[in-house]
Length: 284
Image (cartoon, rainbow, N blue to C red; front, side):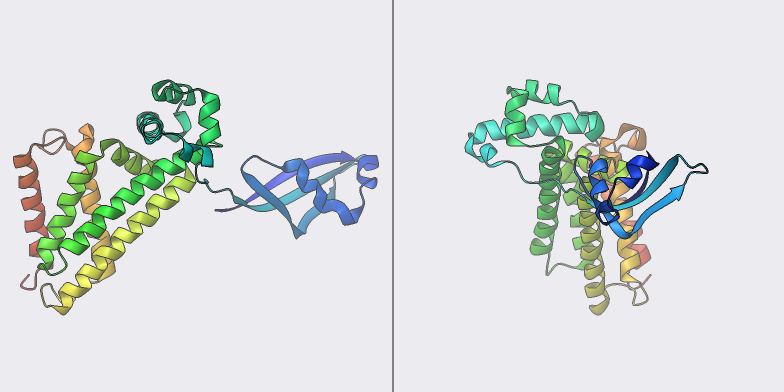
């Protein structure tokens, strides 16, 4: 992710005069930040008089690239599979309960049964650990989409759409904490590198639905005047709201959707599909 920021530094004239103008770029070291690789653009360093003769104000426009989360350290792969899973599950629980910013590494290592020193031998930063969790969540969600595509390739359009929705409910049932991280990251954006991956997954879902709609139009299963990209966005947004309501009490309470029983979910799926058929069907 590219960022741009402005910084201000005041020097007296003696300090300023002692700096070789050809080495102004070295001043970027004064603004080095953890996880950020800054540089000063060639024409972005400006010296201004501060309204008096004793001070010089330097105004920096700094461009850079935020560091992406990296893979686990090799040492993580050397511990037993059971221990890896325990660390991973402790991370999922902590991030799902408290979000990225408020997640406590002390709680995490306690639940994982390891020391904090060991944790940071496996993952250099909290970002890296969260990156693994987000990568796993998006990877599993992609697997569900691939499964629907593979298993319903020759099925009628509306059957395929129904299976997309039902696979979302299955994902939440089978991976409730990963689902929580998915929706929280999508809404809050508090860990930008994680949100980027999840937004990319959402785009992939839109593209998947849009391609299904194009095929359905070609097969004359739906109205010919539909805009596939817009309809895909609308369907994805509707499904996302239904899925969020399934595990979020204040959204779906009193409607039989929040933690709904099988018969309640069937009723919601049937209602949703009736709505979609009447709006998109070839005879609508």
